[in-house]
Length: 195
Image 1 (tube, rainbow, N blue to C red):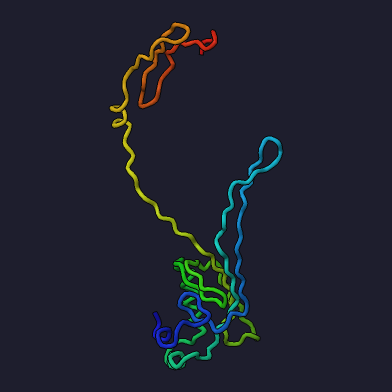
Image 2 (image 1 turned 135 degrees about the vertical axis):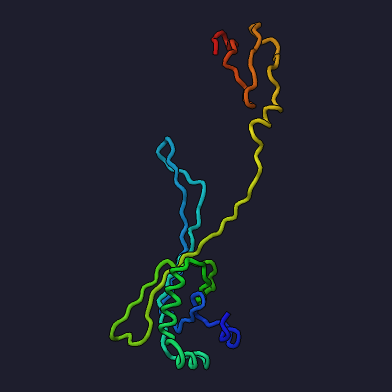
């Protein structure tokens, strides 16, 4: 955590550890997808709605005007605030590590910087004018369970069972193989039709 953050609090606009002088525009996007399955009658049915990850797009400006005494001293002895912000934002997109975004409406966590575009021309001067798009990611944690092997299940099965006499007077002949019932040798009749 930066010393200036400890002394003066969190800046109102920030991407990761990069303080932004102003967001000229913020776009907070939430979308959902409705599942659609066609059925025989030609209609479609829906059984679920999936919320897509949040997408936040910002247009921001960073200037060389110091926003604290520490920024003024840093600008005198090191790289400019604009260069520092540009390099830090490039490191964020290259590192692929989730960051926190502080906007005027909300603080978002677990965002990945997926687009970073800088525009410089005569009118922007020595400022960093940029647009950035961040996408929220969802983490999933897996767990490991132990599944018994087929060999240990075979000991639980009974080999051949006498199920008695059927209606037609024939005896069912089946066996249990690998935990499943094998009726391939059965000569039972259902309604006079062998199956």
